[in-house]
Amino acid sequence: MAKTLTALLLIAGASCGGATSPTHTAPLPDLDALDVTLAERIREAHAAVVADDAAPAAWMELGMIYESNELAAPAIECYGVAIDLYTGDATLERAQAWARIGQARRAAGEIEAAADAMRRSIEYDDSYAPTHWRLGTYLFDLGRFDEAKLAYERAIECDPEHLGGWNGVARVLIQVSEPEQAIEVLQSILERAPDDASARRLLRTALVHAGRGNEAAKLQAPWRRKSALGRDPWHREFRKYRQAPPVMEQARDDLQAGKFAEAIEALEEFAEDQPDDMNVLSYLAWGYYQIGQRDAAQATIDRALTIDERSAAVLRVLARIQRSDGDSASALTTLDRILAADPNDTTTLLEKAKVSRAIGRTDDALGIYARMLQLDQSNGDAWLGKADCEATLERWSDAAESYRAALRLLPKEASAPVGLARALASDGKWELAQSVLEKVKRLDSAGAALLESIRERKL
Image (cartoon, rainbow, N blue to C red; front, side):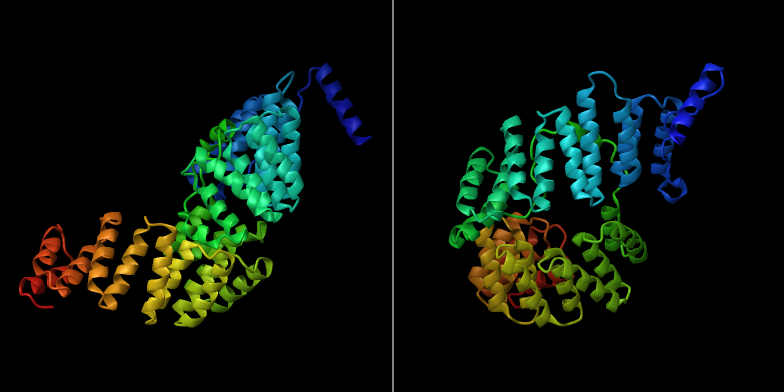
């Protein structure tokens, strides 16, 4: 009744020549709490909406500025208004707006609502592969694997070159204990895209699940950023609005810069919205530890492991804290928990090798480095670690070969030529050792001292 009365009053006001209220009111957060540059961008986009609140494109632009800077709620509101304003046969525009709502809801942790939004997008455009792929990913996260597989397969039908769809099908097959079928799918991907890192990691996992660990060990699958999943012009358009660093990236940068208080403040706020985000909790635990709040760090880790006891991000931070506390034995146990889930996790293997070497278990460390090189011959850190272990064990010839490999892969690593020269000199190859160091443009004090000793033919 109240809504009807309001509508009648508005109509009456218009017919009498009176002013009318805007159809929609654009959301505006507290700009004083934001970065100055971001606040100015929002202010300009908001003014454009106020100037013409019937223009859906202006609402979409304001929404994408909000979403790209992790302001999900106002972004969703803007997209909803844009959908209402699109007229006639603007089906693609409505599909894109619903897809943006889906991604914003997913970023806010609302996975079910995100999946519903993607379905609405598909109602307007059933031919856009990335939307089906994202729907499949959300359904996978919800544990609805049969539905996820159908969505991934539809993505492939829309775009056979969309690697996200193929990788998604493989993920489902691994999850439902069909690793051999997953292997077939992944091998077909790698025939077309041999450098696809996602497919290579999934193939390694599928081989392990299929009991083919020896093959998995031989597969080079280095950990890299995500591969390109396929053409996605809608998301490419969105990325241009992402100028201010997201909360997580800024927090990580603050942690690395020693700005622990700033990082913790941002992470605590982020954790309130996404309490199950393992990356947030791992960063937060490390921040607490750095400012001396050991109990808060442990409580954060315990909370995270209650949610996901196999979270590699959280367990790595736990191991890092244990090592910093001088408890290397516990750190090794924690790292083994990660490797129990993924024996070929090169990041964890590298950390375990470093801890082993630090406590004098040189043979163990050497074995781990050798294992890493079975997985990826191009891992310079593994070659350097192997060389250092061989030098410690006075296996000079082997050490020299390993240092050479490290030097080829890490040409700017100052310790590689110094280690190579020491190994060569210890093996009686004085002139060769001397020539290695004389080719280095700038030696540190240790390198310069070693060169002088080699010239005098003594170590």
